[in-house]
Length: 135
View 1 (spheres, one colour):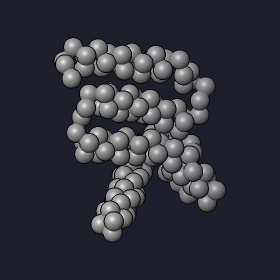
View 2 (cartoon, helix red, strand yellow):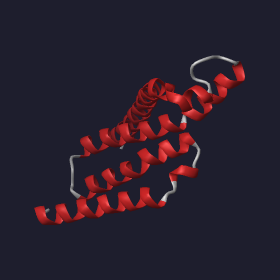
View 3 (cartoon, one colour):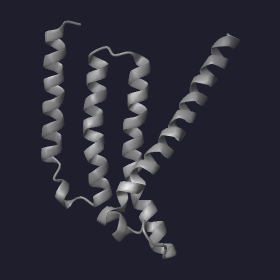
């Protein structure tokens, strides 16, 4: 792939990400969904660029795993807040998450989702390897 085409595609993906975030009206969205959208739109742009730019598949897989882990971590904030609200526990209840404790919870949830996604990918590729060796 020539360098000019890669630069043009990067600019196109960047413009698409910017326009998507601008048009999404994040002010009216609930906090966790707004945060997830804020991660998901650039993640889709990065993965699209990597696919166009013919990036190494291992790097692309690792990048996709962490980006989707961040999105799922953001979406996991809502059930975490509901659980803490229901049980009457402190710190991670919905008010606390909205006022700053998401900074502690988000990395923990992201790492947990990354481990889970990694285990699922290993199981899928292990099953493929077993299925191909039997043929």
